[in-house]
Image (cartoon, rainbow, N blue to C red; front, side, top):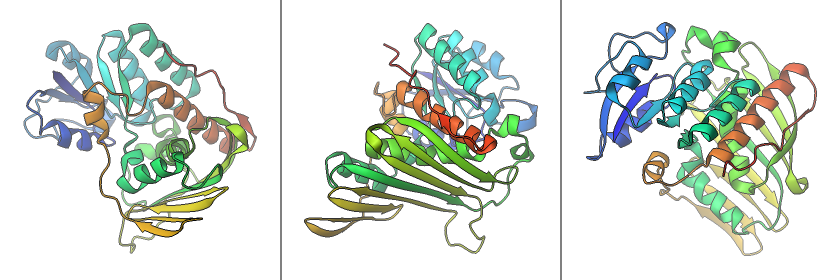
Length: 317
């Protein structure tokens, strides 16, 4: 299988680390998504460099593209790949506007390509196993869930200040927390209210209503002190009729009728490996719905209004 890389602005290095261990894969090329991304050489050892990604797709006869461009370019690149019959493993969000999202969905359906997005944090072992526990009834029926993403600002590209290219903090980092909500509950998002601060947004708070009356919130910030020992602070707290589960990157704490448990799982599936094996670790239908929820939350914060999240993301089949 010939696999190429377009852009290196997100988590493509995680994909590279998986691919370089496989004998059935040929990594046939890397190209930047645009001049703003820079260029001149491949960031991945042994992967040929191309200055133009469109030319690379033709010359390498790629079967699949790992797409991680400047975020606002993601949708156009996915659509081009779809039109060429090339499967895609893409950075999230797969689109930065609802119009783009609808266009991506049409292209994926029309050309019947396989698509997966880099919802890697669903597969952090503690969050993955905690979601399994909740879906199996560990806390009874879920009533409320809160999810947190807190990061250091550090050094960010200049294009983060351009909404058209960045897309917004809610769809960029908030979509991970939105994904956790879905992974834990299995409930679709119906509506959202939100607030955010700054440009680009350095803090945001979103409140969702899900199916069956479940309520959920997401708090995001880029205000984690530089002195903190870790770059990020990820957390989920899920409250059900029979218990509470709290999750960090290192530990799961469960309190229910059976008592108190502290768990530290270290195993979970690997997202790209699952995709390459033919599975849908995160299905296209989930990806479209999660992206729509994230974009609606950003728009709710921009307008100060409650936004209804469409139920139009029906299965592709």
